[in-house]
Length: 451
Image (tube, rainbow, N blue to C red; front, side, top):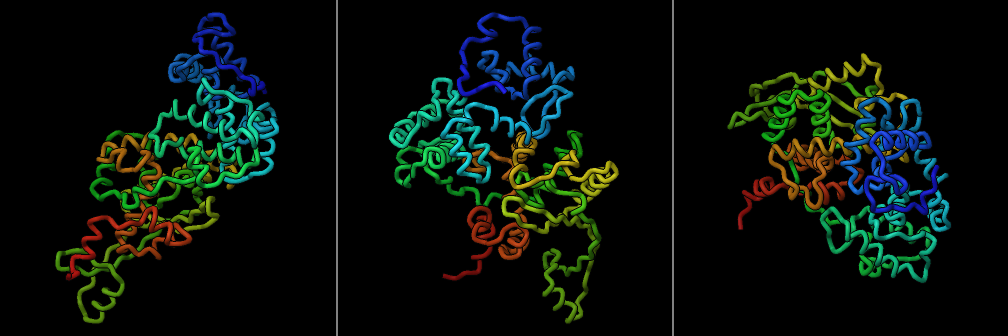
């Protein structure tokens, strides 16, 4: 693999090795580069001294892809030649063993001293800072950073990142993931301690943004709107099914790709109820039991239920999930049967050989998760949601986690213990981040309180 630690990123556009080139020459050069190893669109853009990745992809990468001359490595943003058999794991291994930047002393210390979650993403993120990929105006060799100068260099790193930030800057700090990469390198690579106040002063604090959307929810009317939109557009049935699964199971964005057909079941369930004064259906078991004792009329109906046993790798926990919406259950069962007839192992992932582990599953499904977010942001926008509803970032994927938890909490009159059994090991996190009562529900609870 080519050395990247000394990579230069000239600002000249449309030139190769300092000489203007034709489109065909660039096509050929891209194929030559891919023979050596897979490349991302960003890497290829910089190779040819382009400043605009979108334009470069449109003019060169996508035509090669559409012609079948290059293909994307499944689960990643890398392109390779059709006959190559690279995977996300092999790319990561090659990156860590062959790229010069990861052989520098400070990086080797960091790699040896830390194996925490997503640490590989942090390695790459900090490498991109050093190489000038984050901001071409700033580059630094990792080994130039030491216990004597780390504070002054950190200030320059932060200034460089904020100069090109394309996100909302809070507290004058870079994005949380970038701060984590910087902190990881400094603590485990350079070997320094970052006291809380020092981290805040240097604008690399470890604090997360306070939850602002703990009462974020989706109404029944909005769900129905979304159903109509998805059916009207005649998109792949997967998008309709996935909307239902995301809402009702409120799994983490990447966990949805771990769902195996073997862990799903569909069954009929009889639901008993009595009619309330407003003709509402009361299904509370205690109310039903009392009504039967009194001899009142008991009504019932049969509904189709989907039960899914879901494993969350982040917490290494198994949770039971239930989908009760008839439209989603019907569509999901049809989709399930199609996948089963195709002998697929996973509900939404095509490669049966993939074994998801704590270390690899986020990297494997990264591209899928990003695609989901882009697609559902448009749908949520059309049914009335705005960026401000989601707090700092409009992350549709995490919106579904809030939607589902709030839906179940409202349905169970905020029974945190019951809902927690489907999602959390404790109710504290559920209450703080997802389970704040909506204003309407809170007003309903205090309506009978007398001053």
